[in-house]
Length: 306
Image (tube, rainbow, N blue to C red; front, top):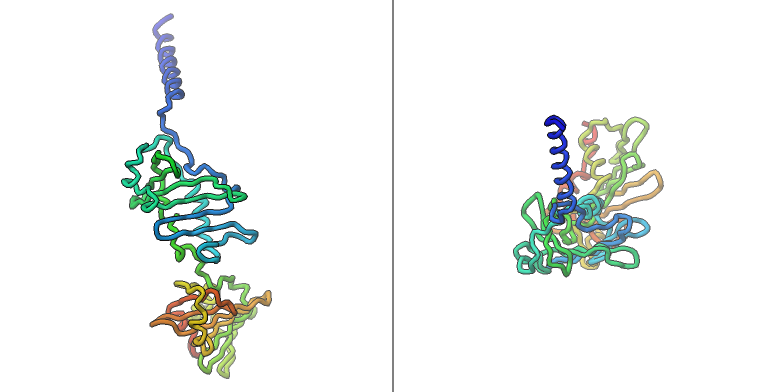
C-alpha cells in the first residue's frame, strides 16, 4: 500500500473514532425544550409569585382568566405563552446542581415565578420556577422540587409575570370598520350620528346633514376610537360606589353593527383627567380611560366639514 492510499485511510479512521467518542460522550451539550409539553395537551396555566397569582383556563369559546377575576385575557399574552414560553430551550447540562444556588439565581418561591402547566382532568404536565433576570438573552429555571438549575436560551420572565393588569384584554370595543352600521354620540344637549354610505360617511345632527370628506381628521379620530376603544385600567365589583355618575353621563357612545348588535359605552366622571366607562348594562367591571378619549368624541359639526 503506497503513501497516497494510506493518508486518506488514516484520516477516515480518525474521523470515525472522533464520531464514536462524540456519540458516546454523555457530557456533550444538547438542547431540548425545557417544559417538554405538547401544546395540544394544555388546558390551563397557573402563575404564582410572591405578590400575585394568576390562573388561566381554556374554555369552549377561548381562553379565560379565572383567578383572581373572570375576564378575557389579552390575545398577545396567550400567544406568547405558546410561542415563547413552552418552546423555551436549554442545554441538557445544568449550570448548577446545588440548592445553595437557588437564591443566587432567584429560584426560591419568594424570588421566582412558579409556572404550572395543566392538562386534561387538571393533571400537572410540567411545574417549574423561573427566576427574574435582567439579561435580555436568558433566564434561569429549575423544575419544582429539583436542584438542577438550567439556563434558558431566552428571557421569559416578563411573559410569566402574574400581575393581573398586564393580562387583561384592554379592548372595550373591538370591531372591524366595515362592520359598523352607525356611530351615535351624545353629550350635553348635542346628539349626532355618522353613518357609512356607498362612498362617504354621512353626518347627521345639530340640524345639519352632509357628507364627510374621507381625509377629515375628526372622522378618522372617531372611527379609530369607536372600532378599538381601549381601557387604561379596570375597577371590579364596585359599581354601587359609582352608579350615581352614570345617571347623568358626561358622554354616551353607541356603536351599531350591521349584524344588529349594539355596543353602548356610557362615560362618567372619575378622577382628574380620567373617566369611567360602563359597557352596555355590565356592572361587574368598569373601565378607566383618560380625558382625551372624551375630547375625541365631543366634536362640533364644524370639525367634520374641514
